[in-house]
Image (cartoon, rainbow, N blue to C red; front, side, top):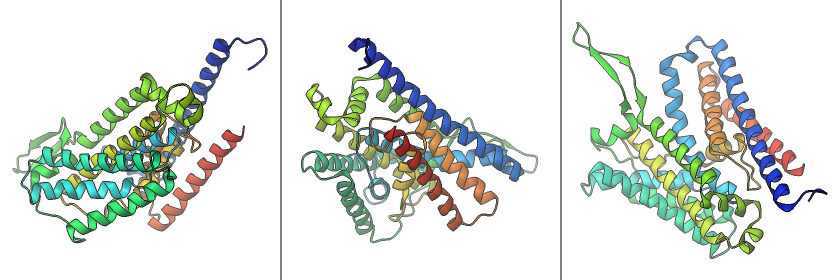
Length: 343
């Protein structure tokens, strides 16, 4: 403690410093986002069009939803590599519940989300009870969930799900359509896609949970110093398990949204999505060492990845080169995070 500071004053100054660090990281990510938008708007006239903006929003939704779950897990000092496979398993379960069991679409999607939650619970219990490293525990779940998705579908897509199954992924709020003189519909305003609204609502809810609730403070405490948190009376194992359950639920929801957009359940969907989720969190300022991170930063990080891909696509850059560019961005942000931790 600095000389001359009482413990409460020192603690308050420390908390202020943490908030300042979070703000700096968030504004740094926001600055990168603005720079990308400015650069791509100059290189491609269609980049700032309303249609392209809606397309980016839909593309970012999956990254952001998974990234929100990844942020909570990483802030608590863990990692979750299974979300891409859990996404696929949840999506095919929802589809099979509709096609084979005849369940209503909302109930089927709740079943898919529940499967994601169960996978997250297993991850949490393996980490806390069996004491396996999070990397190994979630790597095992990644293989198990992908194998189950392929097994129950026979490695084939599940189709013929009906229009109602696609409502969540393809519907939009405030969509305005007019029938023209030729009898064909004319879209006046495409509306705000339901997945984008879902992403915004969940981002606000989880941000409130982390910043304004006792559970959120415990998550940060566990990620900063698990042993100190345990000595302070925090139920560390319960908190860690809760973070994995939340990540699993969000992965299940993302799977349902993705399969709804396709109106087809693909057991191979979601490959490498876990890396996008972790990258969006890290780009947004979440520290891989734990204890530091914000949901707002993660959403900005998801938009950085989405806009980077969209802009490179519009400029004719190959998918292989895009992977190289995004890989370099991830390496740069992790390096900056390591420098910050050393300081």
